[in-house]
Image (cartoon, rainbow, N blue to C red; front, side, top):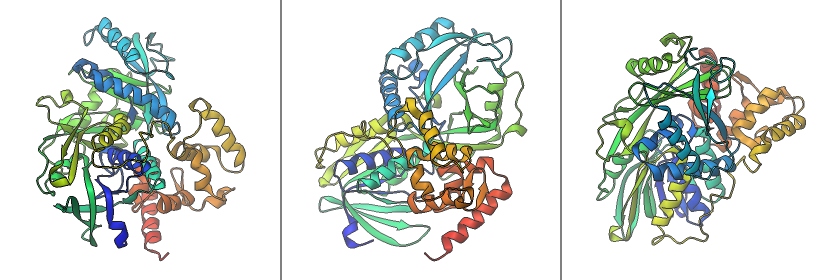
Length: 503
């Protein structure tokens, strides 16, 4: 890094979805922006969500009307900006009268239909749960329910798409770079950072420091002079993945006996994603992984509805994310607000803004709000813009998604359609940049299994900051889920060798 590259208007600590969204927005407004993350971009909470872009139907019970309305509006925006990564998804809620009365659900769904701009998705409706349709896989005594639409998203790829756009607009992006300390000096921040695990140290300077470190937000504030005063509640959300429980394209939202809801979502063609839990955790110093109690909780919740019960032996993968929620004093982790809180400290001319809370769905609006707050200290060359410019790989009509796939098949007639489909799901219209001059299966290089080929793996390294095997297997793709343990080990060995080779 040259001396010229150490001076910035804005330094963002944290490369999850919020940091990525802010970097994109700021760079596009002409703000000289740098972003650092101690690990892989999107490597923590932002790749461990329930993979939904949604209003949050259950938040209505906690009177979170502003959050729901904003989320519903953003759902429409993201369906338009990233139609390869954000797809409409029907949800079916079986009705269990002992848990919530039908009138209450109807009122909630009516509000859900009308609180935000719903221009592309069908309205909610009452439905019959026929075993060959919406009741597939469910117990026969469940005969009626409700249907509504939200959207499913590839959370990790949404992070990468925002960062690729930020880079296109001039942002400097540094993965695996940790903040050691930041001090105020002559009206700006002087930040000491370190690459890798005890690697090279250097300094970055910026007028404004944004703490978007997610569950590490408090740790980062403690490394700055005069840390901002706000509390964070860390709440763990765990998920399990099992073989597909029904053949339909719809998801299920299941009422649990404790008042919470559990999602059962079609995932990666052959699987079903089940989540999530809400468990308070003390600190990020502890290893964050699913517990046996959480697994049994999720299985018990869905088994109340499934005709064929699941067991712990059916679980093929688990993952856990820690949500950095703003501490609003509520004891029940499920009741803590998912809304975001921004705390600004502008003493001595060096501005610090810390982000508490937030959710995947509202990241773009959060970024706009952050830049609105920072307008007294940053000069913008343009107004808010991210609501109209497609993310990389987008730029096509969501209604024409299948037509785009057919054009892709016609353009590469010798490549297997399933390979092209998976590439389109990940890269959208940028598939051509991934394939380059490839025309035949042999041109894709080594087949690692799980739908992953060397041509795409090389692309991830060259263009998407992949620096470890897991970056590719579990974040840039989910190929690891479809691989055997031996295939994953073989890929890790190849990746390590390829990374060590001189360029």
